Length: 556
Image (tube, rainbow, N blue to C red):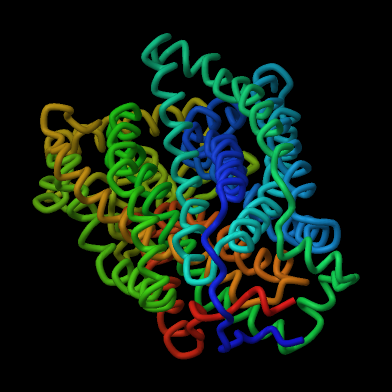
């Protein structure tokens, strides 16, 4: 048994029957509902930060809310191992039912959780526990769906058929945004932020019921069914997948040469772009969500376009091109996004640069997840004020007390060590007024002016980011399936996919905003996806084999 791609091609199977198409559609539809459940948290991160992390300062609360979001991604590889093993041993269909049940119930319960004001620190603990369950379930979902569809698809059409699975992730995001926007418009943003945010989570119980009904109607994968009838299923999928170097080498290559870059491109184009609009550019949340939704509608067909194209020219050229384009253009594209979404901010940044001059030894890492740390040095006071106002700044070396310069105006910071609480409040308030004054005079806006937002230009930029997503994501399910034999396919492909998407991708918002908080420059968070996408391009080009002609039906 070899894990390396086979180059022989068997006679193409006839096209899928009507029953097979129905089964594949049912699998894709169930995945839409799962992704809807999972995305709700990401879209509602700012509200969840206030509801469950109220004890923290604003910047730390937002980053910690993103970290709780990332917790679900961190455990995805463990879900891949658990459910991948089950899928390879007992079948794809029954594993589907377990993952959808865990995912749906965990999401529903989030809508019932008391907030921090009601039960204190237990609230975020329970929230994170539910996020971990969601992550475990999703860790078993994608590998099963991709494997299931690919094993139904005729030879030479796997890219086209599995690209429909890729669409489901974006449709799930679109559905979650549509529900959120609809509820916000119906009940108003104040009521929605207070208690209405729970409704999208509670509504998921309906989607859960539909998903279970759909999945009960599915048949087992023909490739797995044949293998099981012949008594050739694996008794130890984890050992076969990762305990033998020949297969482990392919797993590592799939991770570093394909899924890591795919993941950061995917999360930059959808999640980071949304957070950047609302958090850095101060675009009102409803407007930002609508702009993202428009780009999703425009970009979604390209999943099928690139998936189908990969059946003709190969998976590797398309995925590698997507990584290269992303790494090369993210920096100018996000600067252009600033120009289009908040031109006043772009103008102020160009004409009145903000700097913090400070002794580096006095500057801490401004991340306070427990709320126990107190930032008291003059450097920390200055940087925390600017970070809380989402103002991009550069740090310059200096001595003595830190100072903020806004254009030509300089404001001295202050040291809080040794001051009473009352004295600290007085100094903080005076400093905040002086800095806010200087920023206003320099033209720094408190929020993006709706009248000056260039919606068409923003949608064009976001759509281009989405096309990068479709290039790396459209063909990847087929590519992963084709790398591994049937008996260990679910397990083998699930782990690199979920390490890539769960760790490299899922940690992107948290890592990017932590980088921004530390360096002060709102664009520096892009260094994370740029470096990883660039590294994936190099590794993939050098070592990744082309798999489009592999006959997976000859590889039990």
